Image 1: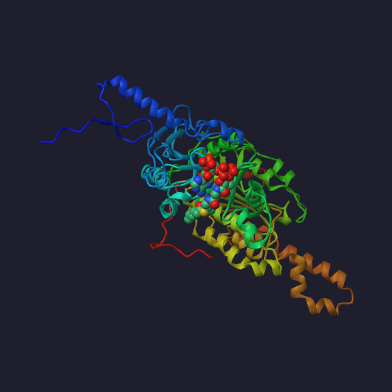
Image 2: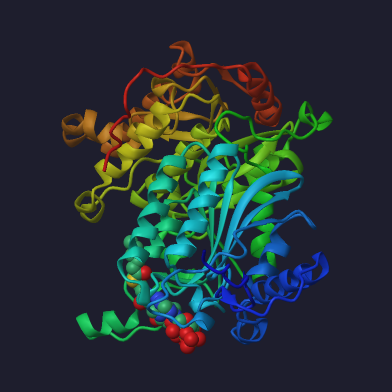
Length: 536
Ligand code: HXC
């Protein structure tokens, strides 16, 4: 017979050890539990984080979630790499606060990296917690929100940390198009870690504190000799204006997390649900003379398409995606008659509203997102064409433009096209024309829909005639006039079924709302296949 071993208990630093055995009561056990818990909740303390101008992970979750709705998982989890770290170097949470809560009463899953614990770096336990959050979000059909603030792979853990990242990426891809994924960059997000925001549907960044890059300033200097700051390399402005990685850039954490809540309020929990609808609107049927005041009749006079959108949507209220990147196309989420819609519009204020590479990429991803999550699309067309030139051709405008074409062709949600002014050539086709599957096409009477503008067309068609003319100026004026009156009006397209109705601009909001109501029960099964092959 062996003597019975002494009782063991976990204590504050978490290593089970023999202790003299005072008789445990529920009260002493709870006191011990409260001590461990309080230490875990404190992480590395708020002071350093505040000094860096950042909130702690828990403060961020308080801002993001409804009051008292957070259910934490794996609070006591810690890494098991005993060989590398002393027990005191095994803080609970392992640098990430994970769980679930609600936003306006709707379920979301969340994780917030805690920079005060191992610099928020990702080791095996940290990754396993994120995997659990992603698995639960997918299983319950709930959006997932990641608050990133991390030094990247935990260097002292080696390859298991990389394995942890792989597990995150694989889960994100499996969840893509099934649950909305939102990433918020509130600190460093370096190395391969940056692929997690890149795989999300929307990435937010906060100016001054958010940074994302694959290789940091030291590596850049070692490789190329170029000296750059963290902010110059991958600050919020860089990703909001140049790379297009950040869909939303905000001045501070409070505004940012409030806008994450706003975004969630416009999204369904998953791809089998519809986005949350607000009450129907009485003001939807009235006339809106401002439409015609905003859009000049002259085809080349600029105006701000966002003014048209404000007039179209409920309460002039919309959330613009990629506000500072590829401004020649505008993509917003908003409501019309209470129903969430995605609006894509050419922007005559920037580059005359042409489609170029970034604009095609931006609009294509937005269209695909809306289609995946049952958000009807309203496309406001005023486009002179694709941007011509060597730069664009060499950089692959053909394949990038094809992405937008592909995205629209593939979309099965209700689709309404409103041709506000001009629509030329390939860009006309791409901007959700009848030929690629729009359900309802409305045109204003000012429309110019054609293969190209009158001047260009006359040059091609009548070059010899013009060269031989006694008065080429007069002849050109006559020929462009003929071209305009014969081909460049909406009735030419409407007679051929390419436009469903020529509407009074003042009725645009009413007609779009009616169209959405007409299409509300649209179902369009896709052919069975593994998946298509979107242009590269
Ligand atoms: C372990 C880390 C860490 C990491 C930071 N820390 N990054 N610990 N692994 N990757 C720790 C620091 O040692 C420090 O601990 C604490 O976090 C805070 O870091 P500081 O350097 O003091 O903070 P700061 O000056 O604000 O600088 C932040 C930083 C810097 C820019 C993120 O820490 C940094 O450059 N870290 C390394 C970044 C990196 O190269 N990561 C690997 C990327 S490769 P103490 O105890 O002193 O407080 C990668 C591959 C992923 O991630 C591949 C996926 C496919």
